[in-house]
Image 1 (spheres, helix red, strand yellow):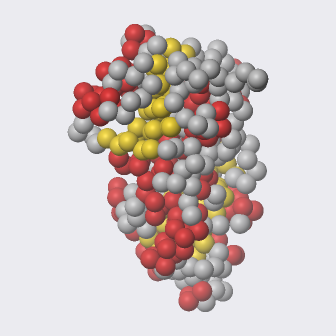
Image 2 (spheres, one colour):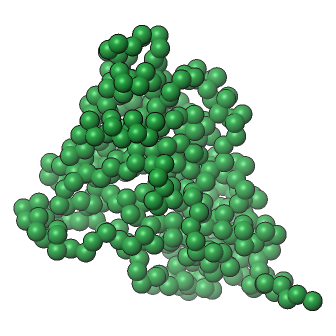
Image 3 (spheres, helix red, strand yellow):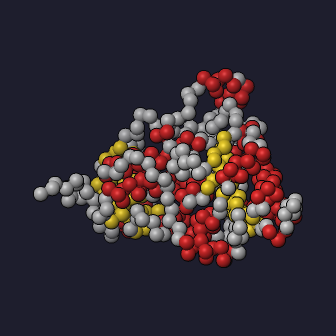
Amino acid sequence: MTTPLYPLSSTLYPRRLLVRGVNWIGDAVMTTPALLRLREALPDTHIALLTHEKLAGLWAGHPAVNEVITFTPKQGVFSIARRLRAGNLDTALVMPNSLRTGLEVRLAGIPRRIGYAGSWRNWLLTEAVPWRADVVKMRKRTAGEVRRLVADPQCAGSETGAPPATSHHIFHYLQLATSLGAKLEPLAPFIAVSDAEVEAVKAKFNLSAGLLIGLNAGAEYGPAKRWPADRFIATAKKLRARLNCSFVIFGGPADSALAAEIAAALIATPAVGVQSSAVSVTNLAGHTSLRELCAALRACRVVLTNDTGPMHLAAAVGARLVGLFGSTSIELTGPGLPGDSRHILLRGEAPCAPCFLRECPIDFRCMKSLTVERVVQAVQRAA
């Protein structure tokens, strides 16, 4: 008789596993390779995902998840723990590194609790997983460091080079999943969207049937990640003249004014040599549910985007990307599977980049170094 790979015991082979998810769209997308590897390793395990209600739409139809448990911002740890107790869960995999998330699963009485080690929460876990020695964590530079590096670029040259490929954030979550038998080898992040959903969103918002290019000019984290709006506008005008394409503008409610500015500029200026009826501009900023956003992104041939949550989402639903990076790191948080040739990721040049700051303390030279023509050519190649 063949010995099973795992003993049929909840101490090693969980029957009802809780994955405590992360709270931001981009991070949530980067957890999907780990979830898919967990499903591969634990085909008979019931996997429940605990997630903020704003992210519930990401997981509709996802092949790695059996159940989605949501919470609201007003719910405290005791309320969440009481709900989890009713789920008869035997194992918890805690993806965030916070004290709160460790406390949730401890108070829920889940017998086996796995998460990354941290001096303030190890006592809440039964298995505190050590960080790998080669991990490169994001560290914000101080304004003084930025000014010093700009004044003396040789200082930047003396710093360590690009992080190893295994420092990408998808490996953080995969490493945790290996505690339950999952493979460490990465998969492409994946969010499920059906053809029916794509057709429905096209019909609802009257999206063009021709070459559709997405524009995502916002970035919730802060202005340091945003390529200037006038450059998005100039790029779109050149693309419209060269490709006879239409545009859909993405963003959340906070991006409404920015999206309206871009839409107005494109509608007011007809394309040279292109019939005005052949092109369209659809502004979806603040007008879609999360599922509709997923479907509309998939409807695009290419999405031109800053480093944002929707950037990760676009790659995970199957769109091609041209991603713009300045204050952040392609190696740590680039979209999709690292090295995916479908995506073109452009890095702004500055001795102080990446600084990981919300606002640039000097002259925004990293993003300003990305020229309109360079971006236009990248979108043309991707299309």
